[in-house]
Image: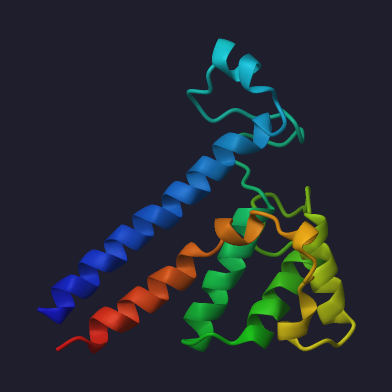
Length: 158
C-alpha cells in the first residue's frame, strides 16, 4: 500500500516539476511585457527571442536553481545545505543547470547569497535578512523540498 502511495506522489511531483519548467520557459520570452499586450496577443506556444533574445524553450534562473536543488537532493539523498549552495555556485559561476549554457537574469538576492557563500559564509548565514529583500524566487524552487518531505512522511506511515 505504501508503495502505491509513494509512486502516486512521485508521479504528481514529477508532473508539478515539469509543469513549472514548462511554465517558466513559456514566460521567459515575455518577462516584463505588459499584461495588456499579452491580453491582445496571448501566448499559446513556446516562442523565443523575446525579452532576453533566447531560443524557444529556454528556462530561467528559477528553474536552473530548482534543478540544482533536485540534483543535490538526488545525489546526497538528504538536505545538504553546503552541496545545495555548491550547486547554486556552479549554476552562477559555470552556467551549470541552464538550458543554453549561459546565465541570464540572475536575481540580485540570489546573487548576493551566492557571493556570501563564495566568501566562506555558512549556508544558513548567506541569505539576506532585510524584509525588503524578500522575493518570489525561493517560492519558485520550493516544490522539490515539498516533494521530498511528503514522500518521507508517506513512506513512514504504517
